[in-house]
Image (tube, rainbow, N blue to C red):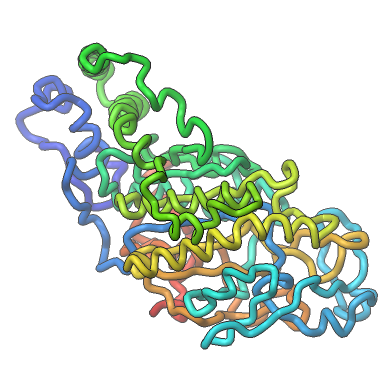
Length: 477
């Protein structure tokens, strides 16, 4: 495209013909060009070969648990909370970090019992009974940390490696680095269950990368995307409109010269036309077997379970179609409460877990039985954790000093835990990890070297992991 690309990509021929002349003479129209050389994506039918080394994973499914799941109520068992329940944490734990709302209560035990699960013996609480059955597929990190205690900044940090608005998200970097296998779907899709996270759509943005790499939002229920059904009932009329738009776009590009926003808008319009043919079939689940529908919870009594089950099943179908990065937002359980349990932890976490537990377990089981888990990296993460002591009487405040995330499939070691927090589940003390480490590892499993995947912007080569981050070798199979 221009010298902004520091990555090995197809380039336009340089000698003998200008970019503008090449566009004006292209026989196949601008759409094909935009989908290949101009935007660094392979031509239709081609398999991207842009990885730095042999990848372990082909796709990522990111299960974003916005609001922050409590690690000491899910994947980080701490018996001391039971022993010292109700005590002053300043005496029992010692020095406390500043909390978001400065309303420190007492040491608080978990409402859910922990048990060792599977052959691996991983400790998982009864909050997630279905996921617990997949313990031997999980690689649990109990020593994750964040740099931010507030949702919006922490969401940006988790998604983009910077706690500020405007940087490219992880999904955009993956799309930029690897392109798309499927010419009829974007490389980065977001399946919305009802809640756009704090920070808004910029959590899925492309930042300074070409706009074609931003996350495309699909609603899991109702109309998946505006204008996904053509307004014209006559195919010939729609085709004529598309050809006219293509011609006008090409003339605009000739007049304007190289311009990312215009090129991306044209490429996205072409993609939108192809999605009109692809998305309705993708979201039609009538062909799935009754057993599959039950596995994902599509017939569950809880409507939120059905919503998230539909998202997880669509995510599997997207993996089958070669989409690189799929992110799932959570359903809107009890308004905008999310996992943000500042009060009534038992109801908040209980309701949210009931929505996602069976569908996630069903997704892991389905991917595995179809032979897709080995090539699909599933990531379960919130933006930070929660305190081992109460906020007020029965909630938990934000805790960025140590929390749990887990990975499955895609080249990670199954049935293991990595790192640890202290005896209270408060601070990461054994092999603490930063967000850049998680990002570096995800890119590594996709065959991308996080130090080489850069983009020239603002006078320097910028990468997702900024100037830090290490691949977590202990997680790799």
